[in-house]
Length: 145
Image (cartoon, rainbow, N blue to C red; front, side):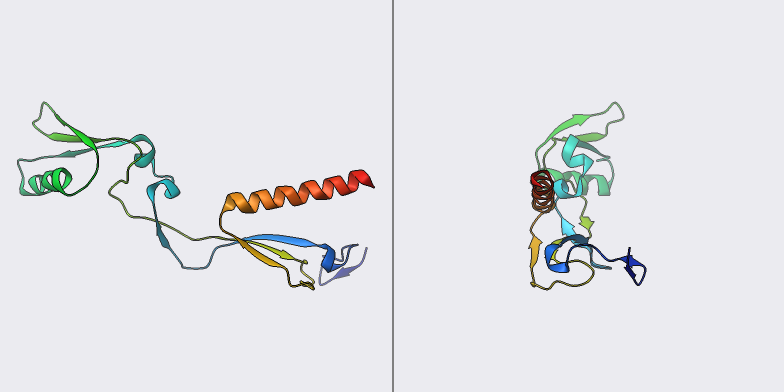
């Protein structure tokens, strides 16, 4: 078993290899929709309780009723508070951020990419499908001998 720089030299040449990577750029955040962020309020709905006896509560209630653009039901509590019950599947009031990921497939391995193959998938699902199809092709080749 030969090694270079602590790495085992594969039996196949670099041009017979394919490499899969998921890369997240450092210190980069992007705004995403509730669904992409896995927001529990989006998934299950939520209640917002306001005290309309205060200036802040009146402003919050006015915003929800006239400007929020969200679907809700209004309820009153025994303590005279207003509860806005929002249905699931709509944007909550939070701004969600996530780190973008790049789903990369390239030819070769750590020794290089002799054929210059490179692909960046648009989604994790596409990347996973590519990986699964490649694994199946390897399995089929081994079965054939």
